[in-house]
Length: 512
Image (cartoon, rainbow, N blue to C red; front, side, top):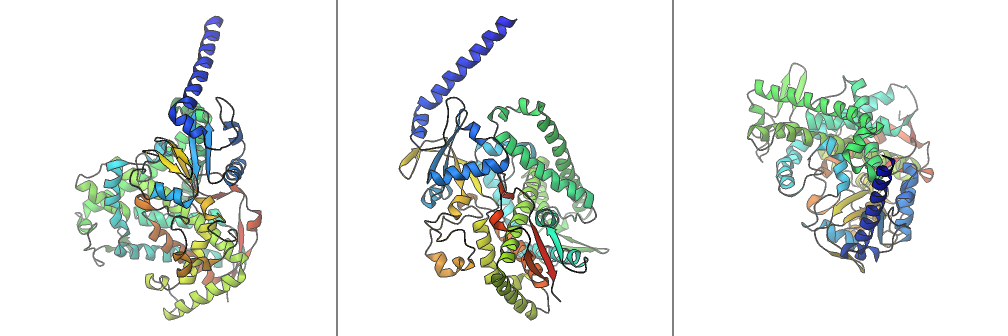
């Protein structure tokens, strides 16, 4: 028995050595090895450098991305990836229809999101994108803005309940409200009567991000059976039960609602003839708005998608639509708090627009806030919620002076290009005037990518901008913002979404 085990171990060691030799000496391996990269050792590559806390890994990745500019290779065991950040290189990937496939990294999200818009590829992605595009038609966006305004008012009232200055831990505070906004707009259901569940759902989303990072940095746990047997895998299974259970319950209730109303509120959805009177129904004191879920149910009724297809798209939008916006608002508020002159200028602009509309925000008034919009864009430059995109090349591409072969994983370093001094003078300075029209025209179009670009750009970018504008405008109109935790001390965790390693607080002082 002992001899058999020893022979198996020897065989495994020999196999790993031969496989590593093969990976580095075939054509693709030879081309990748010509690229400068992280220090590595045979068989294991750079995997030992990518251990430690999420904060340590973030620091390591960006230290080497800056040091080895602008193309960097990373070997994690037998898996090679190339990180790029030059706008010319980013454009070659993002502007093409050939390199639209997401990397295997995103497969780790499949237990939760399955084949939703974020992960799907080919004809399935094209079909889903086409079905979902009307969700962001101007008429439906106007309804979403109403949701954002109502949610912002709740946020204002919750702060004013303190009867004076209040210090808030921004991430959980904002996530609570952006989660409800996406729940109402994506699923047509308010979470205000489910505070305990809402916190449980938000925590579950955070946990899923941690499980993703845990597996992505541990190549040996790519094996599903090995991960499922680990303690983290068992915790993930419980978390998925919570997330999927909630989505399925909402879908079932929404389908029943349309069945009882004989589908009359679905007749014009998805067309340019969307009507503003019939897409709102008053039942008792509850107003029913059309949500993204309704559009998916309409497609289901026409046999375009299945029940599981509906769930994976709703899960995808719930995931992508609340955490990204919360972080965008979080860093915008922190930057305004630290730059009182800019905050005062934003407030003056907002107050002027509010006076014109009798103290109310509307979709039209949000379009009259160009300085606020420049501030939000600059905040997303410094702290892009989606800081990395990962794709698979469908054919060889030459990045700068290096040829990267087909089927290679390519990480697009959004955070890095947003702070590249070759394209952004004094890149660490918060300067909203970078986004004045003449400044934008003279800049490389692919050095600013908060919502990606090209065919797979973010379908909900207008949605996100309206939500961020509404929340920040409301808060700045009602409160002075004062810093508590300074951004110069910020430490970041490596994660799907840009997250601080420690809580970030801000003081809200009511304006009398």
